[in-house]
Each structure stands twice: as structure tokens, then as C-alpha cells.
Image (cartoon, rainbow, N blue to C red; front, side, top):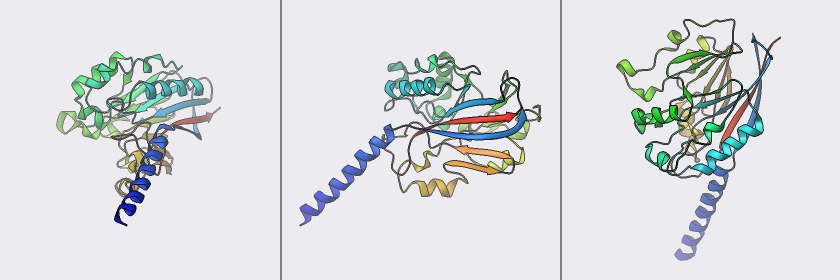
Length: 270
């Protein structure tokens, strides 16, 4: 009787893990149309592809990286934004597998920009940052850039960077010199204190980090920790999106959510 019960439990757990692994490999491309009542130069319609938490390293390698490149080519976005945790941790497996070379092939009219996540700091930012720069990804660290069409892109440093000189700058300081008549998009890996961005009247705020718990019932923990654990929210004039992430942390298993890339179809005033 005990043997039969144990066999049943083992079989059920195995099916859940196998199903979760298959689910973790099945990338969902989610499209979100948004209207922002500001003007840009050129076309009033801009397509942005966002991916977060790719976690390239020992477990996630070339096949998943190439799949992301294929998705970008299929979607043909104007801009690609990578919202932190591009690297899983230690840079050694990335270098050993020669990862990143497919990301170098991404070509978009407005470029490819990234921010740092907590895992870039876990692996040692002094080694990870030069790697990201070597594959021609522009990393914004508490930095604002104005794109050719007038969109102002703000990349925040991750809160894992520490205190003192390395501590992330307040959002109000990063926005002090911007043109409020033009669109403002903020990338911030960890979705803490959404009210800060809402008070600043940011147009679009993008985060990742949570994985929405990755495996049920861990999603209840992320939902308790963050105002938004996964998906879309609007507060005041600010549109928020927290991605469930592209890759996985630890085992390649997802239960209760799917990996994703998010395509924002932005429409601005004529």
C-alpha cells in the first residue's frame, strides 16, 4: 500500500515537473496596445519589444538566446529594451559558451538598450558590465537618453548596487532635465515603489525580476512583496508593466505562469 502510494506521488510530481519544464520553454509573445497623448518626431506609432530576466549562463544557453533573436526578427520592433538579469550570475559560463553573439545581431531603428538587474551584481559587476559592452548593448545606469524620435528613455541602476556612491539615484533627479512634453519611458528592474513613478508622471514604467514566483505557490509571495507581480497596471497617468521574464532562475521549470516577451504598440498624438 505504501509502495503504491509512493509510486502515485512520484508519478504526479514527475508529471508536474515535466509539464513545468515544457511550459518554461514555450515563450509567449504578448502584445499590448497603448495610447500616449504626447508627440514624437516621425511616425506616431512605435513598436517596442521588452524582454527581462533572460538569465544567460549555465542553464540557459545558445538555443534560448537564438530563439529571442528569432522573435525579434519576426516582430520587427523599432526598439528593444532588456530590463535586467540578462546574465544569470557568474560570467564564466557565458564566456565559455560564447553567449551573446546572437544578441549582437539584433538590429532596430532606435537601438537596443539594457539595464542592470540584481544578478549582474551577484556575479560581479566589474566583470559583467565589460561583457555587456563588448556585445554592443548600451547599458543605462542611472542615465537618460533621448532617442531620435524624441522618446526619453531612463535606465535606473538596480537597488542591489549597494549604498553610498553606488546607490541608485532618486527618480526625481534623473528626470530633472527632461522635456515633459515628450514621452518618458523608465526601465527599473525591481518593481518597488511604483508610486514614485506615478508621482513623476512617467508615461511607461517597465520592470521584471519577480518571475511571478516562477513556480506555484511562490506567486503568492511575490504578490505580497510587490504591488504588481506580473502584468499591466495604470496608476494616474503612468502605465506599468511587470514581466514574468524570458528565462528562469534555477531549474527550467515554470508552474502557474509562462515566460514571455512583451511587444508594446505605442500610439502617440499626430
